[in-house]
Length: 247
Image 1 (cartoon, rainbow, N blue to C red):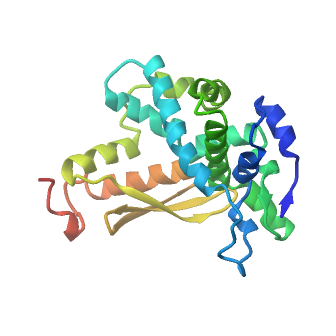
Image 2 (cartoon, one colour):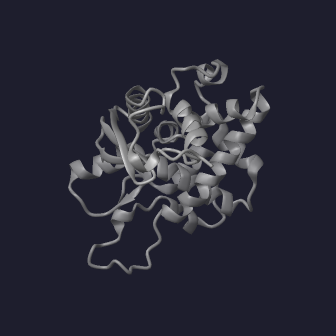
């Protein structure tokens, strides 16, 4: 396993010292550290902590939005998505150079650089770091807010001040799908490189469109736009399995 920088240095960057250093080490351990020949390894990787951190990040963002943004719940949801997206989490991770602290498995230099710089890896590592601090601090939300809200809300004036625009295709698609089918669209990343992401958009098991962009957020927007254009805002040209409207 390779770790380019000391986790102690990371503690200095985020201004938090762990009572249980093992939690920080777990948060920084990429699944590639588990050898393929040992799938039952007891080594803990960042995935479980990221599951915790995902919930905590959403709660922190929603609480902050309630404090800053007036308007109905749908306005909060519209703004929550971009602020808790993989793109936003990865940007916050890059500001503290989180990729350089990750423990990765034995791989060549180009593959290692890709792992440390990939949006989904950085976003998951950021969620794991949040989850680790949440557990280590005794679930101290105020402390977590002090550490992470400034990073997640950095340079977000446009997100906080713009209204519900027709340009937000993903939010529009979510709303229409809930109204029409009672289910939200589902996005799956099918290709991810350092500078390009491809996603497929599903309704249930029906693949409706693909989209690509320089990050997952842009790819989702393009997939949503493709569906809305093709189906005239979900009014025609729908897959057979989706023709039954919500009861």
